[in-house]
Image: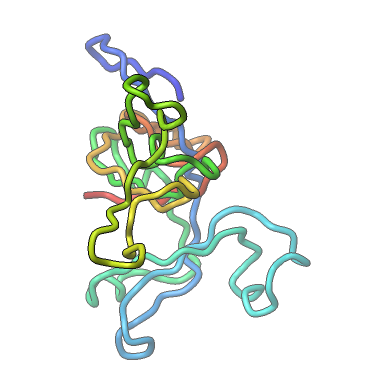
Length: 192
């Protein structure tokens, strides 16, 4: 993350995303594929590490699809490069999706924001325990019961983020606020 100053001198915390040129590798139509979409290729990879079926599209590290309306897919041509300056402008509101940071196996206090038990009144080792899971009439643990387990590593979407800067030469996109994931995570940026 970094700071970006606007024209009035106000500072904005911003996340810098490498949004290099994405190449259109395939255009899917409703007649041929059953739905309209555009497939993009991004990043570089050695040819020996690319599947043989995908080598005809190029040596890209990532392939992602973007669903479109039927009439929009007809205007896109394969092998077209889309740069960050073509897709976004300063002041645009965007939606960012990506995999959140993995936090490993965590207890219920960190995973589900449980308050934990009291430290006094005869309680000894129950400060961060989940407590009762609700016995009652049933003789099993119902599905979806909030318990300890693996946290993070899920797809998270953050809405209403603002584009505060664009560097077209280096292919950088400055988005106000934080985005999901660690350094190096592939995120999807969509306009609203």
